[in-house]
Length: 131
Image (cartoon, rainbow, N blue to C red; front, top):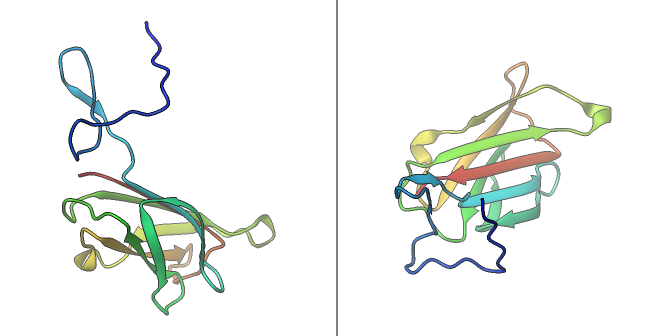
C-alpha cells in the first residue's frame, strides 16, 4: 500500500478529479456543494464550499441554497441534516422541498418537525453529490 501526500490535486481538464482503481473503474467522487448554516432569525452561513448564498423563502424551515458554480444538471443527490441546540432538542424529518423547482444552480429545501410542521433549525447541514 502506498500513501500519496500532496498539497494540491488538479484535474487535467475543467472536470473534477476522478478516483479510480487500477482497472480504471471509478471508485468515488468529491462532494460538489456543502454548507453549514444557522436557519433561525437572520440566516447565516457558518462555513461552505461552492455556495454563493442562502435565501430564506419566507416560510418557516424553507430555504434555497444557491451554488457558486452550477451543477451539470438538476439530477444530483442532495442531502440534508438539521437540529436545534440541546435545550430545544426536537426530532427532525428533513426533505428536499419542491423537487420540481430544483435546478442546476440551486436547490430549495424544507425542514419538517416530527409532527410534519415546517420549522426553522439552528443547525442546518446540506451537501450535494453528482455531476
